[in-house]
Image 1 (cartoon, rainbow, N blue to C red):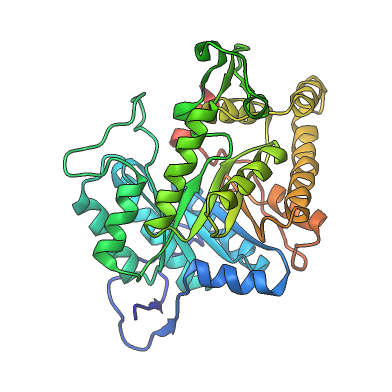
Image 2: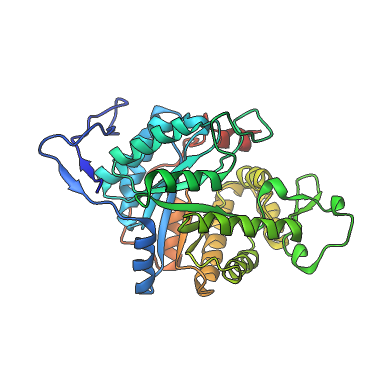
Length: 389
């Protein structure tokens, strides 16, 4: 079996951040076995206690890399079931993604779920990334189609590449057998590509569609139609039947929509674990633009609260505090539903709000000295473009 090694870490970036890229085993190193996600989740769920996992993205600045390593060290104290790292379009962040994944395991003992996307990647590039995962002792891959590259509105496959996440799942399973644990994405409100203006339906909304309707910043009502939702669910089942073992969902703020999605999965015979993706509200602008980009449904009471808070003199602090309160309420409802065993936090490379929610849920482990969060963690990324646009 493939294993990860514990190396000596060189210091880089002129600071305390320590980085290493795996090249081989070497003499005098320690071996840490890697576990598949599905096995860890099943074992955790058998205890009846909720678990957490954290998602990060590769920073584009040296300071960001240093800060992320520091945060990984602190957040490791929370015993996350796993952490995952995103993969840039066409492998644009592949070296750093592999480095972060390998170091998270070797330095902090964290099991990793590495993202792998189809965007601008022929099969050869996917193989290169998976070879790096094997060298780094990474056993889990989140197989995704990926977003269009920056500046491109429509997603298109490249020659020799994959048309969708299903193709990627099939390829990994056929080429690597059961070595990798595979997770796939799920969309409780429908994929953004099929969330269209209600006016285009040419008919009244059904009761189920009414529960999924979102409103754009321009006030246009949009929805994933029942017909498209049925296709989305059938496609999700295909991904699971092809080898996907865990579903991690898109962000959402309407718990009832997620609960219906989870029930629909079970009714379709999709019985694998479903991890709800929790995107914490940290700032008004980021919230508005991210929910707009992802076409996320925002319940009216949350929308009204955000507008009111944004008018206050202490808007920034008040919104962060509200994000913690709202996040903890959402998470409690999810855990109380008994449809999920854990929570997957989209941390945005930050820590205070995630820890704040975990504390309110009684999931926080011991005292944690939190670092400063004054930097723009999105600098140089697509997220920065979305939030700053």
